[in-house]
Image (cartoon, rainbow, N blue to C red; front, side, top):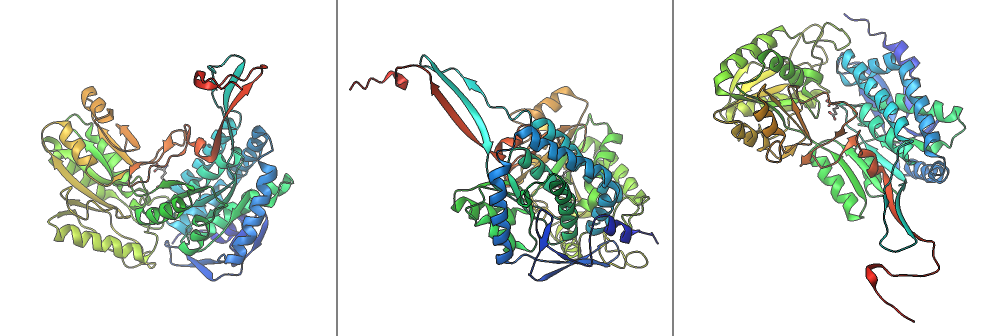
Length: 513
Ligand code: UN1
């Protein structure tokens, strides 16, 4: 057994037995139903969280709207300084927060730490960005006129995040939104409410120490009904939502019906193309990490391996051997590679997917199954599986959030593999393994991968925060994190200034009075 030391961890993160799940800054309150948070690692009830009622939500929105009035006027670099302090606090609390992520969500402790590192990295990025919220200057066609654009804060940003990255995805959104002058209301997944409480405590302390209004960071908790408070709320100009395609379609419609903006980061069905020119050793490492890391519960997890027939047997044998080495068990035990799925519902979906792939004509290459016995009492541990499949199988077209890898052979040129890779409704992440420049460039060309992320000689998961993160098609089209993803958190204003005594009209129009 592993000593999780979880009581000390909870204490360091200010988590109590019962927590108020609604918060504006350091004020915590809540009168809704109780959400129990069980660890999928050992089935323990970690703590309970009270969800947010409509009345609680109204209080949050009042505080958030009030805070926005002052926060938007604080110079952006000063907002960046607050984010810098937040990042510093995350550095200090990296271990307990990483441990809570691991214990509440079930990913390995290393991955929990990695997730907190992503938070720290995005804070650093946002601090620099706070001095670089650049607009362009244009040349006016009229004499004595100046034209330029400015980016202004947008307002209250709603963030809905998923269980699989219970802290980092919030940070990608909120760190950028804060330097952009927005205030944020966050609804974490009801499967990982404690991670939300912990993060809120961390930022609340920073806000309080700096004498800032409490509504800059707000937390609400509950299921989709609480999410709907935000999607239907005209006071929220932008809702950023991460989760399933099904959820995204509902959010997008609700937000669009009031002409709000939504930033969607939905499902992936990510593939690695393995060409005859692939480095097989690298391919196996990338594919195995991509498929079994976070127990296959990343949006970027590798779900399909599209392998050229000439190297198919070799890749298959190497994968089967690698899967034989995998250690499955308590995520806090660093010798394990694979932790549990988030809950028993996820286990059912995993089992059903394996049944379906066989029913649809697939062949199991590495047997799956639910683990039983000592250390697996939570009932959430499953064996990573590999199945030989066709891209057209209904189940292969679907994103199953579990460690199931589909092996799909292709023949002929790389174009055939690209067609298979693109032949799904999702468009998040993709990769090619090749030492051939032509194959790589074709994959990256306009006729290549149709995904938001396309990698060469690395896997599909584990994107760095510096790039824009998100995908096309039913992945939702949103971009979070690096590059110029910040622009969606601001409103753009074009300004034309006339410093003459004449009023010439644009397009040379004459209007003499
Ligand atoms: C997600 O699964 O929602 O690229 C985010 C990755 C991580 C983020 C995944 N940096 O795998």
